[in-house]
Image (cartoon, rainbow, N blue to C red; front, top):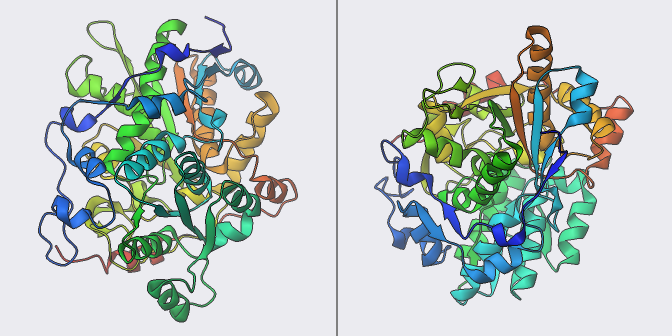
Length: 466
């Protein structure tokens, strides 16, 4: 099929989210109370989350109904389109067929509203008046500002300092929807003041910003905290991507051989690939041990590749261990791939990929061999992003550019081997507010940070004892 755009009618919008926890061969290691190191209880989480989301976090039900109020808002931009990148294929002279799901059509321009809307809905139902959060590149902060405006809630956002400086128009977008934005670390919280006292010129990190947002929520009765990635309920909400996509690939009469996605916390990629991994976990298709291909019953099973920056190589160089999700050691301990809660990544433009940890579900499936991971240089990533925008027309967020680079490398391998693979990447968001990054690349100011190995080793040496 040579269609360049495959769409679904809004009546085909899924009515349920898919919960991969139902199909795991063994359950996730539980989150631990940071003080007692015992498994966290719902009461431990209730200070910052509504009980409805806590139940989703711990649920092992395969299907969870999407509230109609949430589906009505989803219909503003969903179902999102699946594109075939025919122009990119021609430029690469590859026999591979390249597809991408385009989440840049949402009002904030990314996949993040897929979870921002339901999280805000459940908080509003619980009587919460304000939501606090962190944001790296600003995609999540934009999405939560958008969602809280729809439900008449206030929103406070702690934006990582380097991204606050690099991406001023992301801040403006958040403020346009009514969000209150502070550069993190800030002087607004006790932990923020402590971080500034220790390192006044810090670029900040998502771990620091999370600490500030959690402290803010925990010390105000009318406020809760919302996280844009990592947690199980976020992966659940993002499954809307893959559920739509499976229908679209059926229309295209195709099935992906390889699936690529950018991974910071891992939510956009989990949303795209978990419905496919679920097929494998339930035994409906065979488990791939190589490059993807045909299983015995004729169904395809993909090879799944997480793409991350070399300057923050959580899945490729991290430890699979219990660690804090934040720099001030306030969050529950999560079993995940981590570079250590003290790690502060270099100030690359892909701010959404500057997180020391990865989602426990993504980490477990990577550790057990259902997903692989690769890390790329910033300069190589922008080179591929430039080729994409000059062939397909969409300006990509620097985060998405990582998986585009992975697809392009594989497509070039297919040109050499003659393999007609079907390659997929999840287009997690547009780069319309990342023009500073593209200006830096076009004018030779983009550089690759130094090797983080020593800093990672130092940070990992301080992992909590569990």
